[in-house]
Amino acid sequence: MKNLMIAAALATGIGATAAYAEGHAGSVTLQLQWVTQSQFAGYYVALDKGFYEEEGLDVTILSGGPDIAPPQVLAGGGADVMLNWMPSALAARERGLPVVNIAQPFKTSGLMLTCWKDTGITSVEDFRGKTIGVWFFGNEYPFLSWMSQVGISTEGGEDGVTVLKQGFNVDPLLNREADCISTMTYNEYGQVLDAGVDPDELVTFMYEDQGVATLEDGMYVLEENLDDPVFVDNMVRFVRASMRGWKYAEENVAEAAGIVVDNDETGAQSLEAQERMMTEIAKLTAGSNGTLDPADYERTVATLLGGGSDPVITAAPEGAWTHVITDQALQ
Image 1 (cartoon, rainbow, N blue to C red):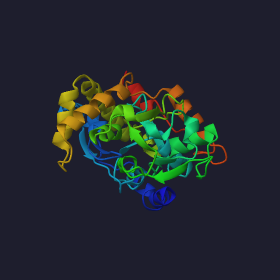
Image 2 (image 1 turned 135 degrees about the vertical axis):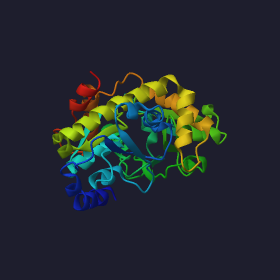
Image 3 (image 1 turned 45 degrees about the vertical axis):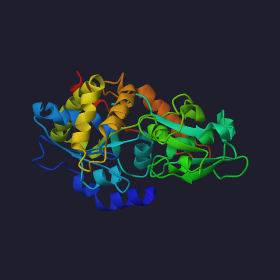
Image 4 (image 1 turned 180 degrees about the vertical axis):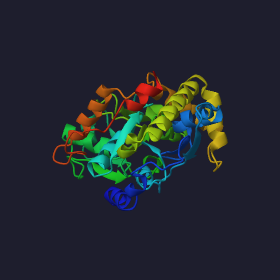
C-alpha cells in the first residue's frame, strides 16, 4: 500500500511543485498527519493567537485522517509543508520522493507498546509467541526495526511475534485480540484507561527506553522548493511563528487544548481529552526550539538501518534534512 501511494504521488504530482508557484509569497498550506487534536496544538495556537499573521502569513491547516497520505498530498502540490514521522519520510525519500526535514518541534517520542500484564510479558523476550498490534501505512517501521534488532521474527510462530495490523483504536487490546498494541503516551494509552482498565493491569514499553525511538512529527518539504527564495522566506516565517505557537502551548496547556477543540470542525474532540493530550504532548516538545538535533537524526537512521535482512532503508540518506530554515527563523 505505501509503495503504491508513493508511486501515485510521483506519477501525478512532483511536476506540479517542481518550481514554487508565483504569487505564493505569504501563503502556506500545512498538511497534518492525523485529525485535529492537541498533537498539532502549536500550529492551531499560532493561527489563533495571530503569530502567523504577525509574520505576514496566510496559513491554511489541512486535517489528516486514515485515508490521507501526507507525502502524496505534498507531492501533488496540495500542501507546501507536511508533518510526518521520520521513518516514513526517509522511506519515502529512498523510494524517490525528495522530502527534506526543515524543522523538528518534537524532541522525544511518545510511541509505546501497551500489554496485558496477565499475559506474563515482563520483558521484550516475552513477546515471543504473542500477538502484537502494529499501525501500518508508514507507522510500522519503528516496530519492525526494533524486532529485527533483537532477533525476534515478525512472521509468527512460537519463537516470533504475530503482527496484527491495528486500526487507529484500542479495540484489539480490549477485546483480547492482541496481547499488546501500539499506543501513544498522549492518546491511545489514555483511551485504554478510559475504558476502565487499571494501570496496574498493564505493562508498557516505551520506544525511548528501548533505544529504538525515532523522530516524530517533523516538518517536511520538497527538496526542489528550497531553491526558491520566496518559498524559503515563507518557511522561515512559518517555522518561527509555529515554534512560538508550540512554546505558548507548552506553557498554557488548558488554553491550547481549548483552541484545538474550537478548530475541530467534526466536534468529536472533548476538552478534557485534549487537555490530557496536551499535557503529554508538552513533554515531547519540551527541550526543542525546532532545530533538528543531528544526533537524534543519526539515532533514527541507525535504528532504521538496523533491520537485518529487511531494513526500513538500505543506505544512509543524503540531503534528508537542513538547518537552512531554522538557522534563519530562530536566530
